[in-house]
Image (cartoon, rainbow, N blue to C red; front, side, top):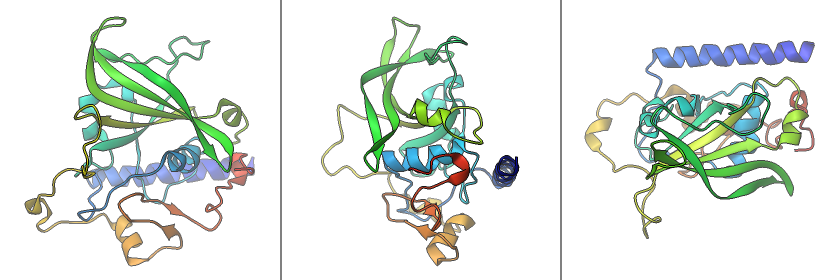
Amino acid sequence: MGEAAAGDSAYEREGDYREEEMKLGGAKRWPPGVRFHPTDEELVVYYLKRKVCRRRFKTSMIGEVDVYKWEPWELPGKAVSRRGERQWFFFSPRDRKYPSGTRANRATKNGFWKTTGKDRTISHKSKSVGNKKTLVYYCGRAPKGKRTDWVMHEYTLEELLLLGLNNVQDSYALYKLFEKSGPGPKNGEQYGAAFREEEWEDDTLDESLMDYIDGDNDSTSNVNGNSLHQASNEESSNIHPDCGLEDL
């Protein structure tokens, strides 16, 4: 009971943080060149696992949105980080097509998401911890529809791990959304939108990010264009006793 109460308290604090964030406009405003670009392993083992275990994020990098209630071109405006990004991240409840089944409902108002290719296994310390699906958006109704360039990667925890978690909230998936500009990345293509100097005149930076830059925190930070997240000494080994994943 004590652990559950502590988890609920942390979750409530995260809600307070998000409410305050919305009052400030919701979107992160970072210095030019700083990107949120986590690896698949980081998305599953750190972000998604913390979400389902109700563990608080010091810096809210990924917002919660039901991705299937919106068309893909509407989602970028709902992301936490919206300036200069070409990929967007969301936590979303896992909606089942049938109440007693495991098949996901991936229909939107004007189209549907269709899986493509093979699922990929996400591993951590030689153990399978999650799965990654690739989804492509089609306008129209299944089985017909017009394929678009909108793509989502869906990350989920392994079902056996999810069943073994303590203090979990409703099941969630993590999504990475992007729009393909062609058959593949161009040689030398840079990550992020083109820099516009006028957008940064009299800019106000996100204070939580400045804690990382100034070193005013008790955690290990990584701000290098590839990844941005914090992990305390307890979390650096990804061990969360109250979450039931001591082996990770």
